Length: 432
Ligand code: NDP
Image (cartoon, rainbow, N blue to C red; front, side, top):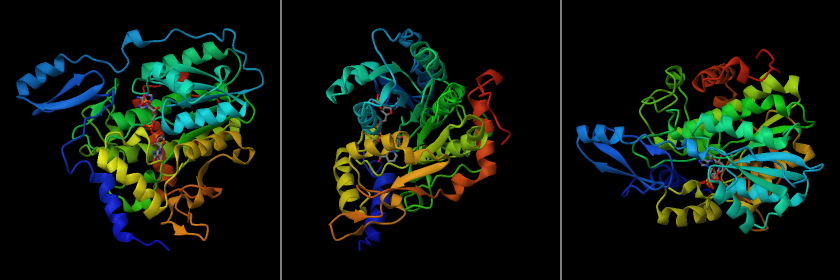
């Protein structure tokens, strides 16, 4: 039995404060940093740094930063199928398919021969490059521009996707892309003024899903999966023990519009690690709310999943090099929660491909789903901590995720924040 509570507490500290304890690591995100009275953002290519300056020059610099994450010149023209034949394959859209879990899921699905994959990526060239590197068959995918930090880009993506696929409905939508910015001392903002983690992970996907429900209702056995996390589930080791906990409060920040200078869902001061966790709770609440509103009328299955701790993905890009070395080791040998990228990709692929995952309103997990610390079984592999191996099962969501009233409120305030109109809302609604 592995019961290394001190190690776990150390992990908690590592996870939430690891990099903070040292000089801040440079972020590689394309999202603009905020400016405060004492620091201003210096945009260097895709990198962001902060430098000390006076309030006056900070204001001047801010004015010089009209930069958009999704400038008009990045708008893609609609693609046409050209010589591509999708045939009887299912049309499957994956956001954030240029890295980690999303990329490995795209590879797994494309290689089954049963799916034609639309890789929805913020960096199209990167998407094309990694698809080739991973050996995805040429006629098994296409890469399309989707910048989730811009609601306009979400709308443009949907327009282009519809032009590309014509009347064939989207069969599967996997909302996988995310950013995690635990070391940012100040919030970064999306083009619409949302704090970056909430804007990209939740609001961008929220609009995307809503714009595609009616189309997907035309497909048989359509599925929408929004990738969740134990960090948004307080009834798990990772979500309950590791500080800070996800907590949307009474959605005071959402009530105020969730835009700059409001950085957090609960309206409290910015806290990067918590902002990510809050966004993951919103992802999982969105699934429950989608199920309540649209499952009966559309037949679409809505689900969430926890892939395991894929400790080597770029999600941890903000962490210092030593942390990125120690963390996978720790998750592998101490908590037993580690899973490799390929296996994690297969898990996500299973949720949309396996007939046994057709059920709606499920939070899928494997190998115990990190409800506890791993127990070492006779075959030398840890069992029950969500790591490699084990069977798929229907995991229980935390009370926070199951809070129906809050989910309803979160939904309604998200509709407002995304400035959605009647026209954007799926027609197939059932009164929640
Ligand atoms: P990665 O950083 O490897 O992948 C994230 C993907 O999201 C990348 O393709 C990235 O694009 C894309 N992305 C980031 N910002 C945007 C944006 N603004 N618009 C469009 N796409 C964007 O992380 P993971 O593979 O680890 O994470 C995938 C999912 O798994 C996330 O939802 C995460 O919360 C979840 N998860 C991960 C766990 C882990 O241990 N790693 C554990 C539990 C859940 P680009 O390639 O250009 O950077």
